[in-house]
Length: 292
Picture 1: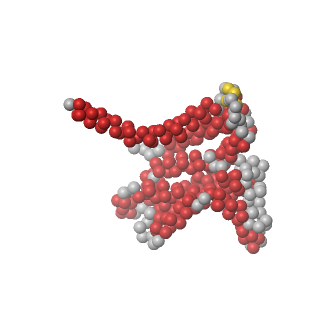
Picture 2: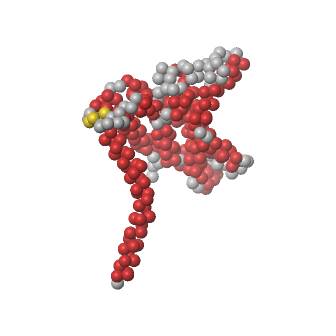
Picture 3: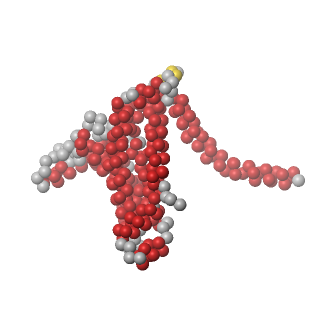
């Protein structure tokens, strides 16, 4: 009887033992930093010494700071420049790659993902060279056809589109793979029935593919919204947040608090970004979720 009870006890405990390593890592590297950051956001701390409790002062300072709102505005403009264009390009590419008659389909899939797995700093350095106003290849091509130089990285008008182009080139392949996985889950008989009814390829794409991919598109939009508002390495390497703060994104503005060792305000800034992105994500879920 004792042996039977012991065996039952071991079977009950075994699942908890298997998940214990994950729970320990999750608590140590996710929950604890989150709680620590939440507490830190209500203090004035420079990274050493005792933290001074300041209550809501960090939040009120940020909400009344023009630089904070300017960084959110820059990220919002980049979002509008990136997300619609990227979704259209990724959807068209995924539809083409999903065609079983396409030759070298495996090669194209690998080619699309190469920019995503390439180190971002290397790509950003290439961008700096290619779009240099004086010696860049892009302005060199413009000069050949008689057009003047453009300050791609030195003017407020062109810095955001240039940064958006870098982000699109870097991450579109990943979105293509996400949409491609969604396409492969759609039953082929749906398209066969539409073909029998005389539906054109464009009609199938708009009236069938897009609605059936609504959940996948929603996931991609939320994922890229997080990436755009956290964007840091691109402006850090390419424009250093300039010119005149035109590419100071929300992520780059958060980094400025760290360089000044203003960790309390930085923690409050990060929590405000979390709230904003969560609110945007809920809006996207509401707008893009598939109907039963």
